[in-house]
Image 1 (cartoon, rainbow, N blue to C red):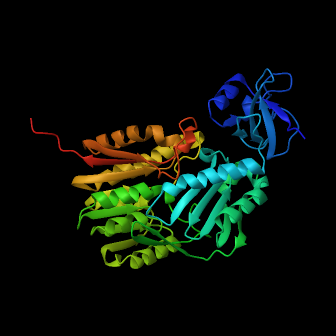
Image 2 (cartoon, rainbow, N blue to C red):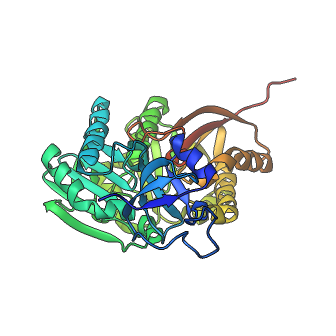
Image 3 (tube, rainbow, N blue to C red):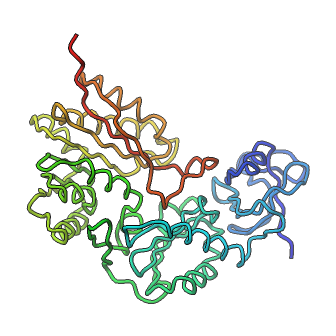
Length: 407
């Protein structure tokens, strides 16, 4: 049985053929080739999650895609080959390729095995924690393929358990209910992982994302290379303490600030696990309020780490996100010692292009000259596909106070 066909605008067809994978509702065409009217999904027909054939305005094949009339993203392209339909064989090939790609990763027992569109599987995330898997199904199309995905993962990796953590923030726009459910075997409340000689407890059932910031592996490694013994380090939004613990493992004196008590308790257990509890001070507080208070008290730090949650999930939140980031940065800079460093990590894709301007304005407000020392992206198991801009969603800047040379 052939898939239903949906026509798209010339611009959308060009993007898909150039390896982008999203088409928005206002880019769909009616059967007569005209654009849809407001509030019109383009044409009646396929239900959410249906696999459709995408055609250009002349009827030529463009792609196979997941269709969702309820989502702002109407189409998520899966295959650009007319002879490669979206079936079990394609899903198996894509999963095998993604998993093999992560085989190059060493030094850790936790990794992202599948990263959605970046691995040609729109809406599917698979994270491995030791002998367990945690998955997220973020699109209606992938949600309908849950049984196939589960069977392939179970057969190919033979994990002790598979947990689904399909959270609200990803599924709401797709018209899907959030889900947390055990799909296979057993998954304990805490899983022990290792990374570069450090050990961490992960809470896959209740933690942020799927339980651990896998995408910050590069940051943890770089911190351990740069931090010097007895330096004073402030880790804000510390979550379960991985960055602060990485710094403390190099002999730094660390203050970790986290407002959610359950995360703070897990962070303390992680510190004890790594033998660095005596080098970390724990603060249960909101960094948005705590930073200004410390700036007022003339606190000074050799390092300030800012790794806030997403401050602008969509373009409509840009103004609010920009104001929030400026607030954080201007007070973080106020805490820097004369040779101090600010490590700023941003996971808000709409804000990424504005970060340097925001930091520059904050530095001017503090009358501070800054030198950009390094910049890096999310860890390598979260690949950035050049033609899919949102796959580059995390960027870190390392900037330091730079004394102006004497005239």
